[in-house]
Image (cartoon, rainbow, N blue to C red; front, side, top):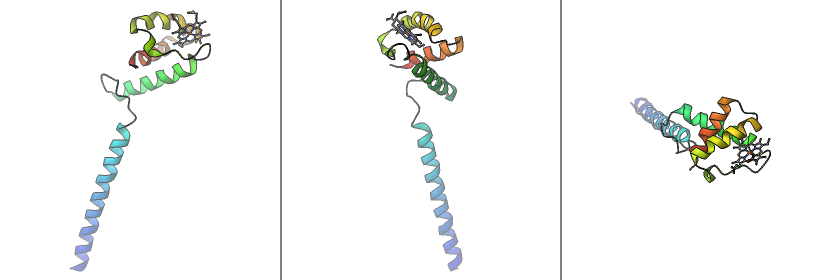
Length: 105
Ligand code: HEC
C-alpha cells in the first residue's frame, strides 16, 4: 500500500517535470525569432538570419553598415544591384540580403 502510493506520486512528479521541460523548450524555441516575418515559416526566419549575416559581413567593408530603414524597399533594389557586385554577392546572396534589409522596420 505504501509502495503503491509513493510510486504514484513519483509518476506525478515525472509528469510535472515533463510538462515543465516541454514548456521551457517551447518558450526557448520561440523567443529568438524576429517578429517581422509575415508568413512565419522557419525557412523564412533562417533566410533572414542568413541575409543578416551576409549583410553584416559584406556591406560594412567599404563604408559603415548602411541603415536598412534609411531607404525605401524600392530604392534598395537599385542600391543592391549596384552594391552586390562590389560585395561580390551572387544572385542568391543578393536576394537574401535584400529580403533581410526590407524586413527591418
Ligand atoms: C567594394 C566596396 C563596397 C562594398 C563591399 C559595398 N559598398 Fe556600398 N558603397 C560603396 C561606395 C564606393 C559607395 C558610394 C558610391 C556609390 O554610390 O557607388 C557606396 C554607397 C552605398 C550606399 C549609399 C547609396 C546611396 O544612394 O545613398 C548604400 C546604401 C550602400 N553602399 C549599401 C551597401 C550594401 C547593402 C552593401 C552590401 C551588399 C555594400 N554597400 C557593399 C562601396 C561598397
